[in-house]
Amino acid sequence: AIRITQSPSSLSASTGDRVTITCRASQGISSYLAWYQQKPGKAPNLLIYDASTLQSGVPSRFSGSGSGTDFALTISCLQSEDFATYYCQQYYGYPHTFGQGTELEIK
Amino acid sequence: QVQLQESGPGLVEPSETLSLTCNVSGGSISSYYWSWIRQPPGEGLEWIGSVYYSGSTNYNPSLKSRVTISVDTSKNQFSLNLNSVTTADTAVYYCSRTNGEYSYADSWGPGTLVTVSS
Image 1 (tube, chains in turn blue, green):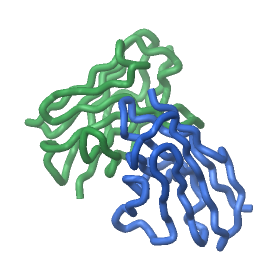
Image 2 (cartoon, chains in turn orange, blue; image 1 turned 120 degrees about the vertical axis):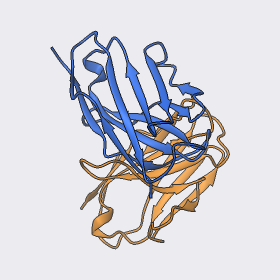
Image 3 (tube, chains in turn yellow, orange; image 1 turned 30 degrees about the horizontal axis):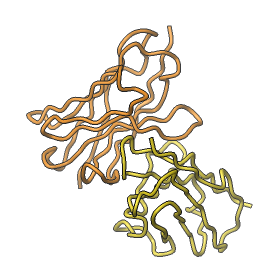
Image 4 (cartoon, chains in turn green, cyan; image 1 turned 60 degrees about the vertical axis):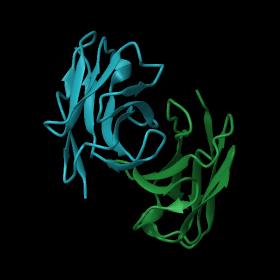
C-alpha cells in the first residue's frame, strides 16, 4: 500500500496567517491527490482534487500544489471558519490511503 | 445535488456482522463508484472499499477477508457488510461517491457511529 506522511500533525495559527500543510507519498502518485477539511462531528468536505484543482464553491484562499511524491495545501489568509482538521488522500493506487491529518488550531 | 445517507444498527456485538446501507438520492447510482470510509473515535480516516454500479469491487487488503460491499441499482443504494467484528471496528462509518475508479470522494453522507460492544 502507498503510505502518506502528513505534517505537521497539529498547527497553531492566527486569523490572517498563511499556513502550509504537506503530504509525502511513499512512491510517485502523479497528481492523484485530494485534500479534505473536516470539522468536529461532520463528514470531510472536498477542497482540492488532482493536487491543485479547487472544488467548486471552495474559497480561493485555498490552494494545492505538487506532483510525484510531495504535495502541499496552502491557506493564504486564515479565516475563523478554517480552523478544522485537514486530510490528504491518494487515489493513484488501491487502497486509497489517507494522511494522518493536521489539526489546525487557533493560536 | 446528490445526497447520501447511511443507515443501520448503532450497536453490534463482538464476532457478529456489521451491516450498513447507504441510500443515494438526488441522482442515479449508475456511472459512479461508491465507497465506504471509517473513522475510529478521535482518529484518522481509513478507506474500506468501493463498488461500481456494475458490481465490481475493490477492498482494503487490511479488511478484505471480512468485507463485502454490494450495490442495488433498483433501490439506488449500496451496502457494507463487515463480519467477525471486534471493538477495533468501532467507528463512524461514512459512505461517499467517487468520481471514478481512481478518483476522489466528492460527496459524503453525514456518517453513522457503530459501536462494537457486548
